[in-house]
Image 1 (cartoon, rainbow, N blue to C red):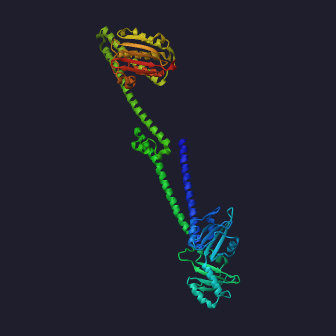
Image 2 (image 1 turned 45 degrees about the horizontal axis):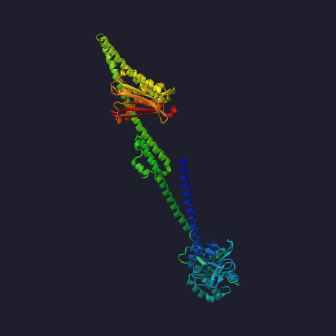
Image 3 (image 1 turned 135 degrees about the vertical axis):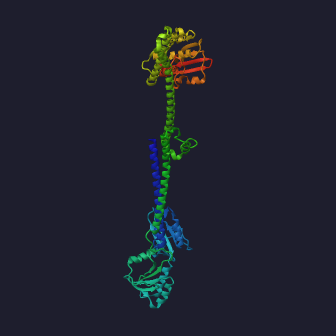
Length: 583
């Protein structure tokens, strides 16, 4: 669940980041396009459509106004001026690149005059009242219009009956040729009744909206026009002047904007491609790492699942995962632990296989030795039993019996080990007196006539006579017998074997100590593992060689602990301590 949450969070926040990035790019792109379109419109149609653009692009807060830098530059380039006036008639923002001295405040009469005449001194003025704020704000844009003044002066000087007088036509034509312009006089119906200039077009009837469009948006036509109409005349004078060289007229719709879209689209495509390559590289590396792990695991190389090179890739020197692998932290850690367990399991399997081989080899040896003896005596008896005396036959019978007893004991030990391994703690447990159990076992050895050269001592005092434990009496007797017989069998005649019992840290214990040969450290470390190494290879019927292994397993089945302390030449002490829960 933790990995699932991390993966979900990882891809969700990446999706949010990428979506936000695309949204930001889109907003910036749209803003850039709109700003570019606005500036282009102002550039080509200044000042007819400039005022609305200036108003929409300006932000007013209290007595402060923020005008875009691009708008200011355009106004300065056109040698125009801008003033923003608050409700009290005070100028709160002014752009005045000209040498004209503009007022810092206006009276009501001044503003009404400018509004009615659309003029201030020799500047043409456009005004717009913005009511979107809590208090109204007036925008005024002033710009020079010498062509209009010139057309008005021509009208006053050359007009006869609403058209250009014949005596003045040649002089006016020469003046118009200086700017490659031509004059068209329209009647009340909008028909051309007179044309003077270098490029007189064919007779054409101008539609009302066509004239308005050419006047307000000259950038969309080949020519820009100046219109003059006297109040008392029925004719309209229009001067057509070609747009300045370099001006783009009749541009394909959104030509520049399409280019911007294409560039941004390519940028987004390349960016998405780079992100995809990065994602592929990032998420493929763990998969390639896993593939290498699986391949080595398939070949059984569990200890090489994580090579030194892999470890350097995955972990820092401090042992922590590198950033690129943290997303799959649980997977890598689980895989790493699994690899270690498999490697350990493989080692344990190899070790157990070796122990099994050694054990089988030992069993074969232990069984082969008595069987060879039995088989030899069988051949002897089979060949000619009459040649042997009664004493010799009894000796042969005794040897066959002893070898058979040895084999039976060996098989019994194998059966007991199997039970201890498979069944664990015996079911038939009952309360026993430890001291009495030890006393009976020691007494059996004391009364053995064959052990007269061994001195047995029992040192459980009166205070230790009542030590109750829970256990299986047969298995505990076998435990004590194995320890006593081991002390007798591996020491020279005259050894003293001491059995003691008592309480240690509120837990019952007993010990079997001797003053015999002792053991070195290597023998001590392997004393209880003889079952795994194989049985005793000595050619003797004194035991199966599995006694100490069985002793340890019986102790463990009773939740106890067995310890050995020994030094060469100083004897051996084996202590068995039972858990307090055994009481």
